[in-house]
Amino acid sequence: MNFTLRVWRQKDASDPGRMVDHRADGIIPDMSFLEMLDVVNQKLIEKGEEPIAFDHDCREGICGCCGAVVNGTAHGPLPATTLCQLYMRHFRDGDVITIEPWRAKAFPVLRDLCVDRGALDRIMYAGGYITVRTGSAAEANAIPIPKPIADRAMDAAACIGCGACVAACPNASPMLFLSAKVSQYALLPQGQPERELRVKKMVAVAEASGFGACSVHAECEGVCPKNIKLTFISKLNRELIRAHLKS
Amino acid sequence: MAASQTEALSFFSTTIGKKLIMSITGAILLCFVIVHMLGNLQVFAGQAKLNAYAAFLQSLGGVLWAFRALMLLAVLLHIYTGLTLWFQNRASRPIRYHAFTPTKSTISSRNMMLLGLALGFFVVYHILHLTLGKVHPPFDPADVFTNVVRGFSQPLIAGAYVLAMIFLGLHLYHGVWSMFQSLGLTADRFDRARRGLATLVAVALTAGNISMPVAIFISNMPR
Ligand code: HEM
Ligand code: FES
Image 1: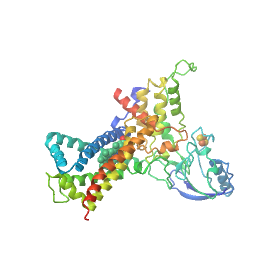
Image 2: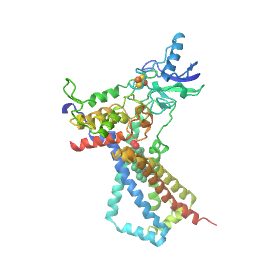
Image 3: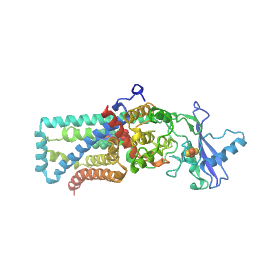
């Protein structure tokens, strides 16, 4: 298969950047999107040009490292799929494919398709943990948790923190990520002692990072590779209201 | 997590707090719009009925003014908070995408500000037209029925009302759906019911309100 890639190229954080066309020829349909980029990069390197910088790690859809906005959709056209799990057979031979980095004030572009998602880490530092003395792990069955609640917490904990929700949101809002992280603790007994403080602190850090508000466009739900539901944002709102009412 | 580490912003300075203001003021406006329509539909019961209803509202005196003050407060808060959020949302993506392919957002959701501003201008025009009688004289404060019929018999005026009500429907198609989320009142199993309710409210309000200018315009067309 042959494609024309229209890719965002930007040398470093201070470069204004621009869209550049690259050829992607001789692509095997069962290559992943990232493998296709590898092929393009190999040719660029052989020509003595700069390869396209992009983030990746596991390439099996679990680490949350990869991601780009492909033809206007974060992680490309397939629902519930990370970019590394998107295959070239989902495109048509000869397609022009636009590839852009996550765009948000809170996610400055470092180079080409690589952005700084540190803002999400800082939200986690603010409360994405439980405070316990470490030691040998406690017996897993010591705290009984009803199955539906464990399942719901797991639905939230499936978030891999890729940032696609921010990238897809017309407001660049992190609420799907934030709500999943707040909910996974708020649902479980281990999260109760710091429940109110956690949501306040995580929201405070998110609010100070330059993100937008949730307007319930649902674009985040539409692109989330882990199918996190919009209703978690509603739970986040409840959690914050509850925390303020209690204090 | 020591309490001293907390830098919790006070609730209403957060976007979540601001959205709560949007939803509460939006809900107040929504209740008003529903009651307003039900009252006005009495225009189909004839001149005496509608004018009696108008006279009854006027007779409320202080209650009427208290109600008007509440509505004014709700509208101003809704607009101010909406603008604040809108500017923040714009600023959060300084460099826009070359290509944007929506997955789940709607024409309504992406144009809430435009629709809302149009509604704001319409409300001012509507008050000038049928409450104060400043824009399309003659106007008789004691004969609401005739004022309405005279206005809606003109194609431009009837058309402006129809257009505004389509905007209202679009604003509420997203607004009602969004409102429950801002209030924290959703669950996956109610998702479809919530969508249905938003659609029902939007369609019912638009159709009900539009029926008045359309019926009056048609029945007064020169034959
Ligand atoms: C009849 C008048 C109006 C009614 C019934 C109404 C109702 C609503 C409702 C129910 C919402 C949803 C709130 C939420 O998401 O929680 C909303 C949102 C919104 N309204 Fe209105 N509204 C009206 C007029 C206006 C006006 C005049 C403006 C002009 C500025 C406006 C701007 C907005 C905006 C921007 C939002 C979206 C806020 C966001 O999602 O961030 N509305 N409206
Ligand atoms: S590279 Fe790990 S999720 Fe795509």
